Each structure stands twice: as structure tokens, then as C-alpha cells.
Image 1 (cartoon, rainbow, N blue to C red):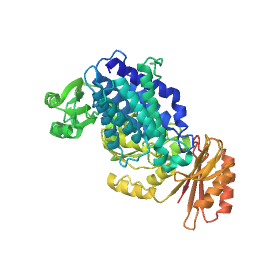
Image 2 (cartoon, rainbow, N blue to C red):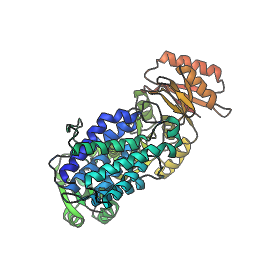
Image 3 (spheres, helix red, strand yellow):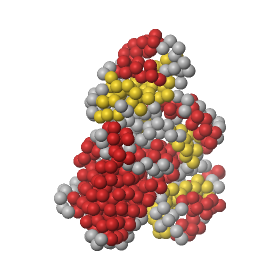
Image 4 (cartoon, helix red, strand yellow):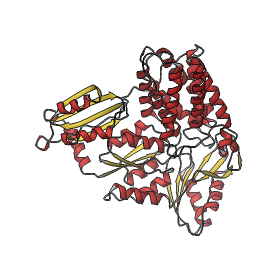
Length: 532
């Protein structure tokens, strides 16, 4: 396989997934209209190929572009896993072409990287399908197949594994579907094969703005009298097996405002120093240097950055939280959140979105509240890539995020806050009321499109036809003698008077509860529920 074919493969996979993402979305077991697997994988792949040119001739560079783009554009758990597959795949490629043996080895490295990225790998998922593809490719290469045949056999083995996923995960068997992530991966592979064989017209205009693939690093400034280090020095190192933590340690005595973030093949470095030559000398020993920029801060007019520095110095701990809906966002800000990243239902923010928010918070220590189970992996990936201390509290719902914020002590250390906020999350029950976007079977229920769903902590507990009745039935299941406080956040489809009427019914029916009502303004979900 040569470089031109590899470029066609990635673009063809991207286009084919764009055309079929709705079909992949339809495989999601949970029948609510969230940002689904096909959509998340498609957005991740679009970010991966947006800077990939057809005339690129270096295999390693092609793979690097895709790996970096997918890393920063990863959305949802499926997108993060896909980015790690691309990252591992990139480690197995070099030169202007690859043999079938090298291609099979690259696919195996992709699987190894993806398994390492998941704390507790589960079989019956995209990981299982990717592993089967790699095993099939290795066997085909040993038998003398060419690279295209290796990919075709890999897909055949992946399809066999995909068909078995319902036997590995009971939730898939109950819903009567195969794993959506595994299906999405095979769609990518099939689209790439079609493109190489000339069966698919390539549409290369990706409707995405071209952005820097690395997080935007701020350059702090101070008054001339306070400047201990004069030169703001920035550059990129490209190499192999780069260790950001080790390189940061080697620079600690040379300046301050030090950042070295990225991957094992590319680091973006920023430091204030009085000896930029020494910094560059240490860097060039690791790899090639690019985009070198050295500014004398005493000679620059930077009053607006000085103000930002003053804000940063005055704040020890910052909070980034994810939400969608004006009311929900306003409440988070009132509870002390510095940056609200728009997303959650219908659109999961990317790793890059989260990194940008983290690096724009005027604090050196940042806690991230994902508030959605499908955003946690992207948040953890942002933690590794951001240029400051970051901790992720794995909140899966908006009410969990609010509970965590109510336990926040801005004057305490980040470790103490993580413990207390995490404990607070465990003390509430989260509920959601939304509608089914397709027919399915889940948790013993036969669900029709348009049914109203009552959800408790991620599990469907009630299925009905009327919003208020579903809420009341859900409360019947979750309220007990220990329940004290009920908080309702009504969405954009619910009027305030309608919500007030429901509150009155709840007050009468559950007299032991104190009920609070907020206009969340969230789409998709009629109500979000917090029970303490």
C-alpha cells in the first residue's frame, strides 16, 4: 500500500461514515436522542482528515496527521477510542509504502494502544471488533495476501466478531442489535477499501474550520519591574517517544510559566526564560524543532495579558463544567463554575473544546465536571493534554455536577475538593425524562418510537405516553422514607406554568419532600431530576 492509497483510505472511510452515521446511531442500545456513536465517530474522523492532502507522500506523516487530528477532535467514548486506534496505527507506519506484514502489525499496534487507553476493557465492543480485524490481517499477511486483500479479510473477521457481540453483552442481545462502535469501525474500513478500489467518489471538502491541532497556550505577561524572566519562548518538538514530563523536569531551573504538552511524537513547549538558547539546545537533542517563537516581553504592549495574569494569580482553583441550556449554564456559573462548555445531549464536546476551556480558566488547578457518561473519556484525555493540573470528577448527569459543586470549597486544596465532591455525587439519585427515538427493547421494556421514558441513574425504569405520568411513576419507584429534597429542571419544551402545575401535584403526592423548580432550558430532556 502506498501513500496515495492510504490517503484515499482515510478520506473514503470518512465519507462513507458521514453517509452512514445515522444507521450506526440507530444501533445504540439506549434509545434517547443523545450524541450517538455514529455521530461522535464521524465528527472525530472529520477532525482527523481535515488537513490530510491527497498529494502527501510520506506514510508516517499521513498517519501522524490523522492521529493528531483525531486526538484533538475526539468526541464521546467511541471517538476517544477511535483516536487511540489511529494513534497506535501511526506507530506502525513509515516510508512511502507498507507491506502487508507491516500493515497487519500497524493494525495490531492500534489495538494494543486502544486497550491500554481503557481502564477496564469490555469485550463485545469496538475493542473486540478491532482485535478481530488485526488478528485476521495478521493471518492473511502470513498467507501472502497483498495489502488490499489484508484489509478486506480484516473486515470479514471484524464482521464475524461484530455478529457475536450480542452474545458477549446481554444488553445488546436484549435490544437485538450489534455493537454500534464496532459497526462504525467497519464502516470506516469498508469506505476506505471502496475508495482505494475506485468504487467511492471522494468528497474532500470537510465543513470544518481549520484549527491548530494543539491547544492554544496563553503567554502571560507582567510589568517590567516584576519580570524575573525576559524571553517568552515557544516551539514544537517532533520526534519519537517524547516524554513531556521528563522534558519539563529538565527545564525547571531555566524559567517559569513552563508547559510541555502533546503526544509521544509531538510536544508544544512554552517557557519564560533568560536563556532561550539553552532551552533550544536541550530540545533539539530530542527531535526536530518547528515554529520557534521568541519574544522580548519588556518591549511588547500587553496590558490585556497583564490583567489576565493578575486574575490567574488571584485564583487557586478553577472549574470547567459541561451543560446545554441557558438556565442550566447560568446555574453552574452561579455555583462557581468558571467556564461552561456547551454540550452533553445531542452534541458531545471534543477533547479540544475541553482543553481550550481548561487553559482559559484563570487558575493553575482545574476540576472538570463532564456531567455526561459519554464525555468522561474525552475529559480524561483533555486532562493528559492540558498545560496545567487537571482533575476529572466523573459526573454522569447534570444533577451529579450540581451536587459536586455544592460540596466545593474554593479555599481547600484540589485533592480535598475531589474527595468531598466525589462523595457528594454518590449521595443523590439522578432522573431524566425524555422520549424514544426508535423502537427497541431495553431493561425488559418493549419501547416504541415516541414513548416517554423515565430514567434513573442511566437505567430506563418507566415507559409511558404522558410526561407528567411518567415523572410521577418514576418518583413512586425512587422516593423512599429517606428522601428529603427533590429538584426539577424543566426543559425548553415545557412551559413555566406547566412545570408549576406538576410541582403542585408532586407537593400533594409526596408531602415529605421539599421540591425546588428551575428553568433549565435544556433540549431533548423534558425534565432533569435530582433526589437527595
